[in-house]
Length: 409
Image 1: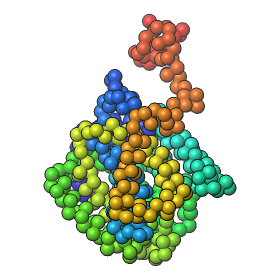
Image 2: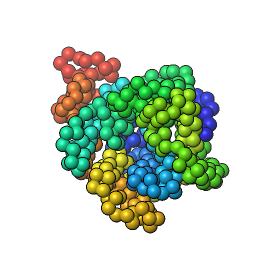
Image 3: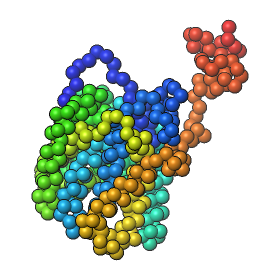
Image 4: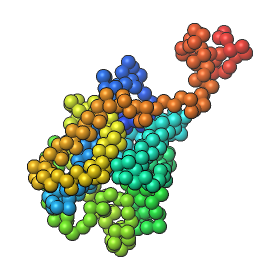
């Protein structure tokens, strides 16, 4: 669906966007750089990607709200399967796209730790404690090796980012990632540690994002693609309606091997490739309809990881507390519409600047105390304090050599 880019002599521009709390690109230079409070967009942010992230995370929340309705409604199951075919791939591709500039540079590794690893530890612990309380299960262990519910994405993002330099040097990255994904889907011995099945089966989407360029996204936003997206989505819903009673939606979770889903290994390999193709087509159709201009929800795109992790408490709480069992009207057409609207409204509220400000300590901690200071950074800070200049580090000449006494000539 994505056409390969023609060779170009110009260097690939560094991505200046951020994927929620995990910033891998260098900050923009300007008064608005680094602003995450929503007051002003950071320079270099592309409204299209913020819009896409927000809409994708709304679909994630709606999908979680529809799950309890799928047993008694074939229509709900069809919509659920259609959305699950592309909402995470769409988000993961963007995550890969903005990981293109990731390397083992000190500041980027620090951001990977503070923006992904630390939130994983905190939310994995918080989810477990919440489940103990809400589900009356005091013996549920806190295990960082067994991601619970939504935290698998943080594990996956951490591992994908660490492998980014490797994907930059292999000759055929996407086909290789597909081979790994198919191999994982037929290997039940992988087990559940770190949710590696999901990490490996979703890997091709991340690697694809690493290899995309701005012109690929421009291509899917053409008018012809937008028009074609309507019948394609309609056909996908019809196909999902037909498939709903004939297949399990667990295929779209990518968390189990083919054998664990009760089929043969070769059928699993075929399904993995088929689902990858279907996901790509629907993701391209989704991108085709994402607005590229600034809208009222563009600012919310910077807080999608907040909405993603925080809405999980309500999504799981509604199951623990039996809301869908106690209120039968939720299983009526009107109730299904109400559930959809409520899920969209809740995740929207959780992406807003005030919520991000409250939970920034967990999602974007600075943790300067945990990292060694680079000698050049320390020298530069000392120079600024002493008034010897805010440019080059103190005691360095044009050649960068340290002079005796540390004073400028």
